Image (cartoon, rainbow, N blue to C red; front, top):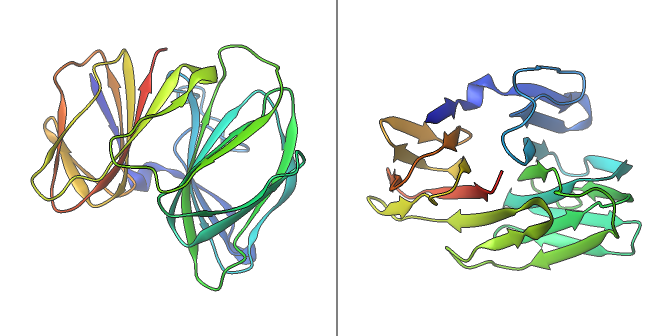
Length: 218
């Protein structure tokens, strides 16, 4: 089954007056939808747009695996474990909140920042927080979020190129840029698909595209 969710169906959040525009794919914060709480381990997939100087002040997280993909601009990250990094387009940032951590995220640059942030529920609660930054991850090199039983595949197909969708119990597909044909559906930037029980599925690029494919064990 392929359940397509369109970009214009996302819940709009954030604080536009403060330069923060957020688009939520799942039930989040004041927007509660009991039929859209999660897909497998994925409990949030937020598209964030921060104006120069805007950001999220220090705030807590726990029992969540947080993976960030910068689309454009640079993200400044600081956390209570002492990490202070700049995350750029093509980098994978992974904050494992575990038993609890605080962090802040800002656009300290002079151009707009866009990033996609996915939250995953861990297999087991608790543990020690950890942080990882993978600069310039190569196309088709999976990144394992073992605590959540998930693999992230970043794909950047050329026009007409076909990308294999993992034969997994569940796959969450997010189109970062461009467009692809998935089954009988055309997906464009910001669109997503929740794939259940499919095998031999491919995504064909309609022009150049960039995809995040989450291979989920549950």
